[in-house]
Length: 362
Image 1: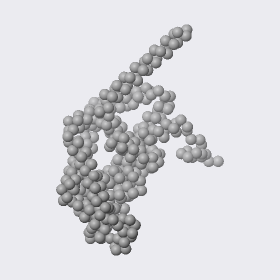
Image 2 (image 1 turned 90 degrees about the vertical axis):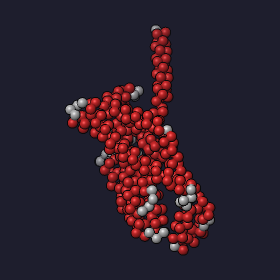
Image 3 (image 1 turned 135 degrees about the vertical axis):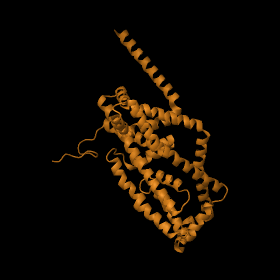
Image 4 (image 1 turned 120 degrees about the horizontal axis):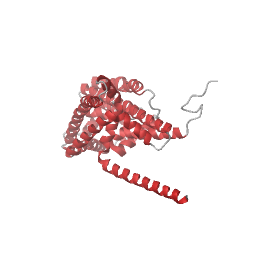
């Protein structure tokens, strides 16, 4: 009796060891394509409603519906993203080459801004320890060169690995097609395979989908809208590299409180300092009344109550995700943080009257 039980235990342990080994080998093989697979998963989740609509229009033909959805995604999202990306790369490379050839002296611009400030403010800056403008000017020039140079270097790296980029892009589209077509069945299979109670696995999967949708709509979409508004504002004001700085505003929109103001406020100060008064005032008005208000207007409409992750956790997880996973970390970081909070909430649900759940009315 005991021998049979021991043999069953050994056989089960051997099977689990085999399963772990083959899973690790599969992850190792798929690792180079992890970013396109991740973005394919995001696209399938975000555009599943579109695919369902295509299913209704095409009378349940799954293959044609998935193909039509993929075509719409390509035309409406991927092609514009490639065009904008090309413009950003061109503008970043141009500024980087200008800095390298000393055609564009950031230190001189810094001095012009300082000279345009009121005399009392100049004295205040000098007395506060920022008066050593030679050193500070060199630092500003170095930061500008390094920041823009990083973008240009990444652009050259993408160009140098064009074959890998095309291959990853093709893999992403291919996987997106199958996820759109079979996503519901795959989701049910994954949920059944999770080694946890059915109710818990359902909560985890539902939370995962909700966090992805809320993160993309609340961070990516809102950030892109703010960046587009910033690029339009900079273009009207006659500032160079408007698309590049619009992208920077979209990235900085992830930061609470200041957000895109980190980009447009120094630009407005520069314009005012060099005498372009109406352009500087327009940038300030647009930054406060248009770019800043876009977040307050769009986020409640797009996100609603999809996620209850605090802002500071979103900030930390987004920046940490970018450091760990690159551009994919914009979504991957908050998703991991959201699943972490959800897991502990499932493990220890709040008592009635605690934070997160209203107390009963007596």
